Image (tube, rainbow, N blue to C red):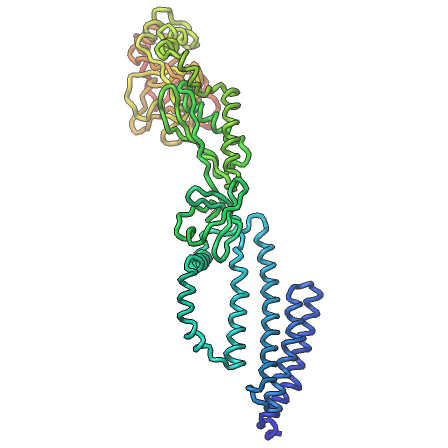
Amino acid sequence: MSSFFNDGIGAWAVVLVVVLPVLIIGAGEIQERLRQRESGFESTVATIRNWVLPLLTLWLLVVSVFEVTTENFFVRLLATAALFAAVAASLQAINYLITLAKKRSQRPGARGVPQLVFLLPRLIVFIIAGWLVVGSVWNVDISGLFAALGVTSLVISLALQPTLSGIASGLLLLGDRPFDSGDWIKTGELEGKVIDLGWRTSKVQNRNGDIVIIPNSQLSDATLYNFAQPTRLHRVVVPVQVAYANPPTVAKEMLLAAARSTPGVLEDPAPSIRVVQIDDPLMGYEADLWIDDYAIAPRVFSDFGSLVWYHSNRMGVPLPSPAFDLFHHDPIQEAADTEITEDDIAAQLRDVALLAELDDGDIARMAHGARWVRYSAGETIVRSGTRETTSYLLADGVARIVAADQPSRFVDLGPGDIFGILGRWAAGRIPPHTVAVSDCEVIVLDGEVAGTVASRNPALTDMLNKLAANRTRRLRDFESDELDPGESEIEEFEPILEQPS
């Protein structure tokens, strides 16, 4: 028995009688399982079972058992047929994998796969199979053929230099992957969607629906903008001009409302508005609108511009009208018409409940030298620790007195509320600050004049002291119930406005 296995014929007999039949039977079982699952690899396994394994078995039988030389013409034909069958099985597997890759690339949000990627595996299989058949099976010395074709190849390469350059550029683009099929790119004046990356050229569909064929050599040397990588997030910047008379906060609110209403604009990142130009009779803004599909950028630009017109009309924020302004705009008269006079300030002071008992003379004294100013939402009106002799009257808007050491404690102010230098804080305590919650119109009063007027009106002095004390208590103990206006004994607070003795 040992001599039988020591003999080469015995070992090959075991391979032919046992191993190969087991492989064929196993391949048949795998094929049946794949057929039940409707797998695309069934045809590959069928080719291996029906052609590759039988041809390989026959070749081994002839060469190993019958000891026919591999240089025999019939043996070489068997080897060639077996290699061709193996190539067919490989191509079947590659085709199925390519089909799967194409289906996945067509899913929403998936990156496309260039056709060049699908061609390379097949080319590699053919090159390897050809080299094995010619060089190993038929023993053809191809080195001499290469030498003979050297001069011819040089001439051909010089003649086909542009073509070969395009092919090389295609391979470089495939390796660098600056873009994929389905990506939106821009190079020079061309902007469009990549349809395919080929051996020599690439196809890009522009916004007119036309296919533009670009040599790969041109793409490899050009500056490319890829709007789909690394993310599909893209910012659309839209310049907008608004009439100078509109407060910036109001204009921004109008533009933000239009941006949020524009279809396709993302909520995260949220749209934003920036001031980029200040020039009477207009102010320039830029709206940053974020989208996740560059294809809709022109539509978003157009829709936002349309919605700005409607929102400006609804919200009372006029857009600039150059023709109208050219013939009818009088800046000097307009400035005079909009200027706040002392009479306007006096009328505003008379509407304040705390000042209702003052006579016209005191109202006139307080209005004299007072200023009407505007603050934007978020601005600080009175800074913490400021030592001013100034009082403020909130004419319009919403403001807030905020404790410096605990921002969660605050007192809201509305139109008609007086604030500012109404009291001094004890040593070691940080005075609060006042901020504008919305756009505010504030009358800035001279503190000395206000103090003089209050000192001649004991009732006003008492009310101002109680008001300041209540606000101080609320800032100290924000969560407590609303305080009685009569409570004014606060150890941290020392009134400035004292009643005359």
